[in-house]
Image 1: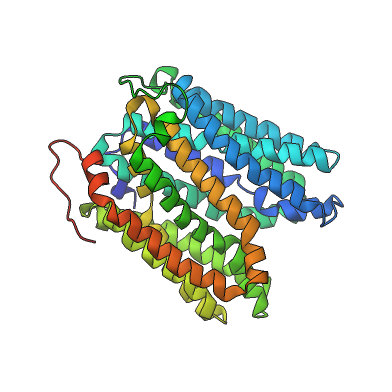
Image 2 (image 1 turned 60 degrees about the vertical axis):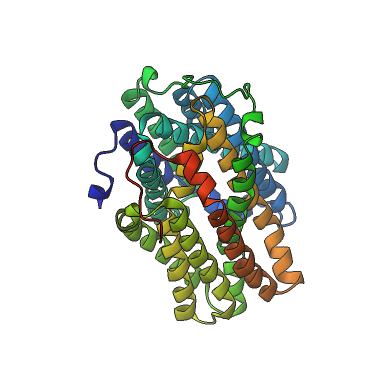
Length: 403
């Protein structure tokens, strides 16, 4: 599998290794509801903490992208990772709901600062023709770590929630140590070889007409994918299936993506990335929408297979497109804007998805997945020529135009 990613520079592999280590500790957030219950926090107050956790994901990418361009990739990543470890301790020790919410916001904000800087670092150090592969490697690292963390979390939680917080903090500090040792300061600073004319804020992003078109379309696709977190569990529960079915679906998704993504990256490398993204997004939206007709473990498994294949095909294509559109001195902010779009899409879905499912009915959710998901994918396909002109590599042999 690793041969798929051969030839990438050392920095890409350092980020890969650090990301795997860091995601191995992604065990607190999935079990946060259970931890709050063990602390005696009433169900009516739990949304305050979860809402604060979601709000932090809206702040962190913006700050992380800005700092990545102003002070450098490496310092920003270190700040986010050390801040994450600190926030884990504060969350564990918080005495009441107010302090729990503040610590949760700090935790998600610090954690989400890292990705924009890491994405900008890849764009700095990986040749343009290899960025798609590099971002696919990063996406693969996230899935590898998350898959293992899912198994670790359930085991550790039965032996004490303090183990979850310890592992999460330790994994963040381990990634920070990897950066200190393997990414010397001179290799991870902000790049200022061009002047984008956008100053130091996010105006450079939002004055870019392609980014104004892409971010909402990416956001729709990300929101639909987030339905697998909130509405898939409800559908499984409504059919009277046990909680272990949901765990089985999560394991199936993780295993398929981990196994298939390197294969998909290798096989689809000769095709242009936008047609691949469109095809994969249509497949994923269709698979998620078909959740509405699933009724037992096997049929749910079939839908998971479909959207997991789509996820594996997409890989790191959106991050690669954003990196190639960005001026060299604004790569952090471009990555930050994409990560912020992901944060707000997930926040809205987790906040509204349950309400729509309960009030309007499951059919509305799944039909929305099909219509909006396919529509957003086709919308990106419609602006593919503009994306290709902006991201073309001088002197490169054109890839196949179809997917």
